[in-house]
Image (cartoon, rainbow, N blue to C red; front, top):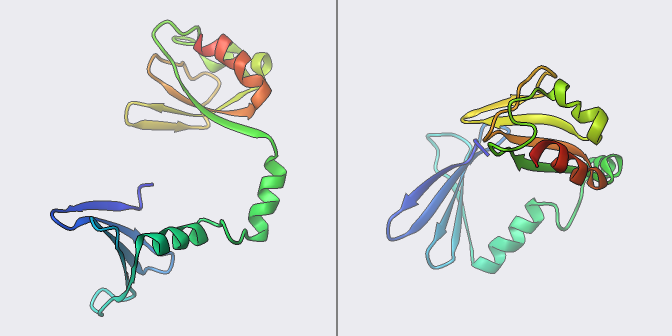
Length: 159
């Protein structure tokens, strides 16, 4: 996640800064002792609100924030719509059957029933690549489809 910045705090632990959707800034300091301090800054010039947690409390708060205790209705609706959708990442090798060939040439969707939704190449990410996009060795492909179709995709494209 690019919105999280990290910083080592020698002798103390590590800090993580996360922006809030309303412009607030939240900093979490994870101490080497296991204690966590949460600082919330609503105004850069104001004193932060500070709350400290022990390790167990911090993990419970993380579970609450992550939705373990309550799942908003929209999340349940999305999960129901997605059902058995598989999202996976695969990396092409030099000897992969798909290396040097385009998505269209490989007929990935027709032959494997999987869809390439992104290609991570070096420091770039190609979202929704065009059919003419040529796959290269080292490309990390993000593919979407059904679990039962993944093995055919792997044979046809990755090898």
